[in-house]
Image (tube, rainbow, N blue to C red):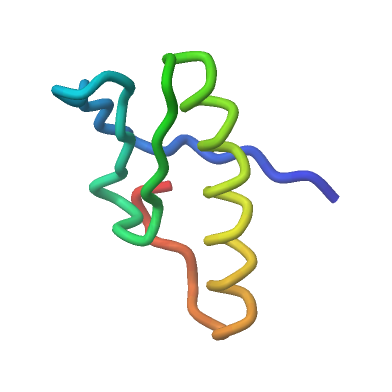
Length: 65
């Protein structure tokens, strides 16, 4: 079963190039990429990994999702 989440994001350009993305709702989500396209692609993997981690730890997902 597939789930859809709304995750607030903070996209920060880096001085050396590329971007870092974090989420105030899920502090464990951190990823980066050379372009907005790449960082959004990486973000999907990062969110899936964190959702799996929460499940493994039997922690509820943050209510902000």
